[in-house]
Structure formats: structure tokens, C-alpha cells
Image 1: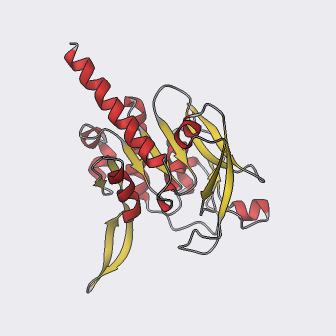
Image 2: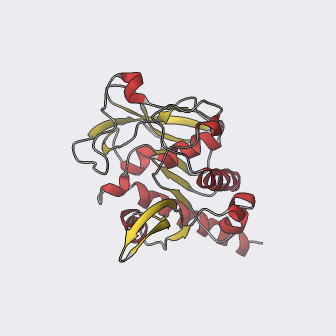
Length: 245
């Protein structure tokens, strides 16, 4: 399972340096589902030719992080947006587009859901607390407790199948949200109360899902495991095709 790494400054031991990193709780859930997680650092070569990486993978996961550059979806940046990391944007967008073209299973979490939408030609709402007059979706930096809320899922959708209930309790932490929905996607979950999109997925047969909440923060969440299952099934179908000639 390929997991796109963030570019952040990090401290460990005696070091304080820029680093390519992924929080361990994402990786633990991939491993718990029986897959091996391989980190994909931002790399200009991957942005230019994402197939070189995807040829070696069965699935792709995009994790949370800083805001996507507003220029990626043709907007002027909001003053409260994070400073963008253009290389990360370019790499993740290229990987998503190529993975979707191949029918490879893709899961985007928080920022990752927004990358999926932007990669498909969609837009983002840049600062929903200002738009809605509420801080419901973003609380204390670095914490999820106290910011749980319900999401209503579309019956029969991929995300509904993954979690098994129509109303799902989630922990989210974001100030941006999906705006215009990208080509080949549909909104399949909205926050109860204000209707903010919390899940988006492909409207075709390929397993493509973006969730605005953080399933990695909940050890009981089945969402990342559903990605691993989809990747395993895709690998099995590919092997069957090869055997059948």
C-alpha cells in the first residue's frame, strides 16, 4: 500500500530538520489490515511519471496535512490558508489522476479527500468557519477529542458499505471542504446539522473514496481496512486475468 508522505519540519533525537513523514497511526491501521505500507515522499520524478511508483503498488492512500494551493483549483488564496507546499500538491495530484485512470483503489483522508476532488477538476471552500459562522469542524490544533460529530452517509454508497451504518460518528479537524465536485465523483456523506461534505467517492466501478474525517484516529474505524480489502481484491482479479491469458 503506497502512503503519500507529508513534507514537514520535524524534531527527533538531536535533529531538527525538514522531513518526509506520516503519523504512525495511519501506518498501524494499514498493517493491522494485513498490508505493508510503503511511504512515497514528494519527488519531482514521481510528479512527472507517477506510473513508475504505481506499477509497484496495489493501492494508494493520501493523508492529512496543509491546505492545497488555491491556484490548483483556480482560486485566490484565503488569508487564513496554510502556506502551500507545491511539490506535495503536484506529486499527490499526479498519483491520484494516474491511479484513478488505472482503476487502482484510492483513499484520501482529510486533505487527501480534497486532493482527490481537485485532481478531478473540483474546487474547495477555503474557510468554512467564516462561511458558516461556526468552528464546529476545527477545534484545538493537534487534538480530535471534543470535535466529534455525526455524518449522514448515502445508502448503498461505498463509504456506507465500508462503515456499515447510515449515520457515522467521526472526528474531523479541518477548515476547508469540498466545493464544486470533480468529474466522476459524487458526495456520499455530509455532516449532520450544516451539510458540509464529509465523504466523496467515484461514481464508477473503481474503488475511490475520500473522507474529510480522520479514521486513523479511531482504532475501531473500518475505513482504512476497506481500502486494503479493495486493493487485495484488485490484486486477486489481476492475477486471475493473467492466469486466464
